[in-house]
Image 1: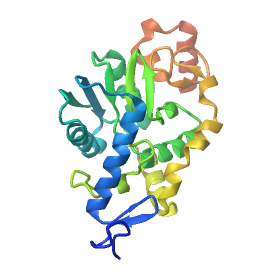
Image 2 (image 1 turned 30 degrees about the vertical axis):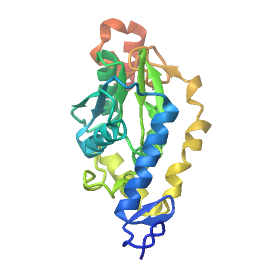
Image 3 (image 1 turned 90 degrees about the horizontal axis):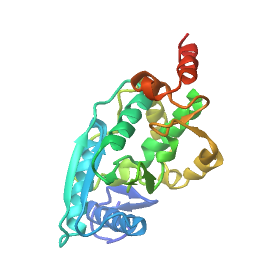
Image 4 (image 1 turned 60 degrees about the vertical axis):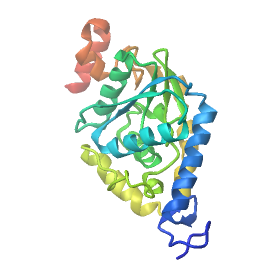
Length: 249
């Protein structure tokens, strides 16, 4: 199959329903990245930025760093990639990430999560009944007096395959989430689903939910999530700790 954009090279990457060669695929992603960056008003010409990632998103983090420097060649950017260790529970991994953001000296932070991760996490959250960190699905977030930018929130990993930095399929340490990721990749061959499923998250009305006062996780009761109750017990009420203990029992 020939690339539908240039009409010359062999098509290898499916982006928004179009089969493109690697050169045109890269061009489309760079254009999208540049647009998201502009709309978010995230970056200044002289900025210190941290890309916070897990091991399974390290390739995407490296790509984001490359795009930042290429798009803003005249800027004086200081970009740091920091990696947190994954847990077998995806919510605990995300909790560690939120605590890292909370405690970081960086005021601008980029997360490398892609649309296929967010769709899987949406299904995971509905299945387990714990909404946790669903509202990370966004182009940009203001949290802890910091700006958080997620450039690929509506871009699945396979749309990035035109870049040599992207290696392999998405796989986490959470076995249940991995099963959902496998199922999702088989069921949703048409990548348009990854650009539209965000409306499903809006139906849940996350803005009206109770929040953990430390990590901002969505919780059902108390003032702290179970992870913060375990790690920051001195900051959580005794009532919240009792409720978490009752859940374990």
